[in-house]
Length: 378
Image (cartoon, rainbow, N blue to C red; front, side, top):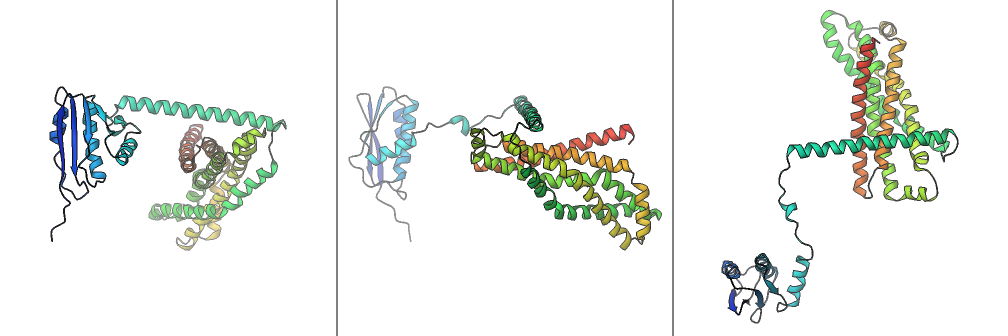
């Protein structure tokens, strides 16, 4: 069965006294056979045409198909700087055309020329420079806020400090326990594969204990807290900024840095070294589970090798590293939260940026401190 076609529509041009009249007739609909408008566009480009007018005396029913053809004709006429008379068109079509041309088209958005690598590099350098200035400015504000708090001249509340310590401390123990145990298990298995070739499974305790206390305990704890607490800080402060709660604090003469940021930073800085010690213990226990149950190392031997392998300086190095990581995580999370935009999507962007920034800072700081320890022989 053939598809039904509406009565044919027609489009013609009539030139009189520098005026080109476009005659629209017939029924225009989606199923109509659209006539070729190339002849009309050719007539528009002829010399001597100054005005373009439409005639709709014989026009029947129409829909968006007719509007699309009229837009093509008008665009061709505007390229020739012709005067387009739209008053003879139906009022509904005039309204649709008004909506179409209400906002001018931005051609540079449609076809963007590829930028050169030099311009991309300059834009990234400017972005990094701005990021560095923002970090320095934020640290400066935190130092001033801490100084005012020390002198008792800020609106710092100790209740908020203990609340945030509870949120980022005891509440984080389950995930820290799980990850640290698994890291200890992995270190024990990786080391045992090579040590078993020489019958030296007893030294699994040395590998696990030193690896956890000096490096993996603090590093894994920092990564966990960056995704758990750093993102939470950015989301909380970002939401307050979106809801204009921070602006309300400023209106009430309360310092947002001392009232909101400083308790969160101090809480994470205080709790991170303690979580690091707990993660070290869980990692050593994880290594013991593998050594005792799989590689026939007794509990006494494992404990004895751990005591002989780990020195106080190893605990101090891991303790200091994790304290630095706590500063970086708190700085990243609070800074991104205070820099959050005014939209709902900006809160998610701030949380994502906080996690990425803190992890980058953690890896870079860990590398620098490891190199320093190696150079100093500790």
